[in-house]
Length: 117
Image (spheres, rainbow, N blue to C red):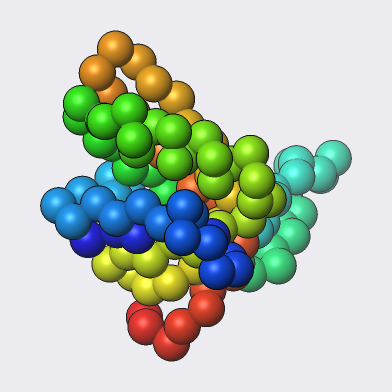
């Protein structure tokens, strides 16, 4: 199950997807860069892992008008939302695209709010 809600109390700001799953719940990467040096070696800069480097995607087939309107409402009224799914509860920034009958929700994770691993 996936839930998307406003960060403050808002009866219009709740969307539940009881049977949806994220496409990439276990994706992870580190903040690092590798730069070639003149002597043929490399210089590595690694600042570690951050939850905010992840973008979670959710595909919904045949979304209802109600879901599309609620998502547009949340995106237009809230800079950040709460996203709860298999990996925990997060603050995130939403964006959506609709292509024919497929809604793709992209959520840029900002901060993890619970202790679930």
